Amino acid sequence: MDPLVEPPRISKADAQSKLDDSTFTALAAESLMSLPAWIAPVTERVQQLHPLSGCRFEEDDLLKPTNPPSEQVLNLLRSGLDHLHAVADAVGEDGRGPRPLAPYTLIRASIEASSLAVWLMLPGTKDARLKNSIRLSIANRRATEVYNKKYDLGDTVSKWFKAEMSATKAQRPGTRNMNLDANFPKSTDLILETDKRLKFSGLAGIDAWRACSGIAHSNGQFAGAALTRTETDVSVIVTIKATTLYMMLEPAKQYFEFSLRMAEEHMGSHLSKLKPSL
Image (tube, rainbow, N blue to C red; front, side):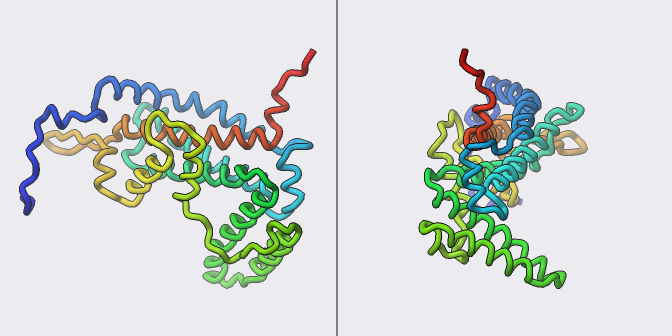
């Protein structure tokens, strides 16, 4: 079918965008092939991560024994890593490469997990960190209540959990008056806060998250730039565009590395790696 409005006439030279530039394509391919090697050491660091005696998390966890902050951060780091690990597995799997669109949903989820971990650790005061930790616990518990209702599991645990969070916030003047029913921050707000702490050579975290969200939500405009279409006489072969995947993956890796470094610092893991002075 012909469009109702005459489309613009674009020359083949003008249509050759940077996404198809040979130098950029080679850079992207090299970076993607090195992803499994990047995953291996960060996986080991996450596996070794736990709060050490005297670290900041030790004090924060004492204020919130149920779903303590260190547990929340570890869960988020494991989630962020697992999604990036899935992309790395696809890159290195029999040379077939990843699925055309699925990696962007994985990248999006990893960026969200990393930004949430940063949000929990970023405040410089105990009260602010405790408040964020309580808000996340309440939001996560609230998300499970629909399933309790669906399967008639009752609300006993949810009522106890809210009472526990009420008792938790009542311990300190800075959190005593917080509203447990307040709306949780938007993902975009949390990501923008993390962006302020990082320098990007390409897309910022919010740019990658929005593009990956568009692809996850079947936005054809975003998806079109993420795909390479090769037409034959009998079929159309659709593969992932390496440059687009590279552009989205780089900020996700930065996010994860940043959140992991913060966790290591505040759990005291960095101190265990320092050599004793002679």
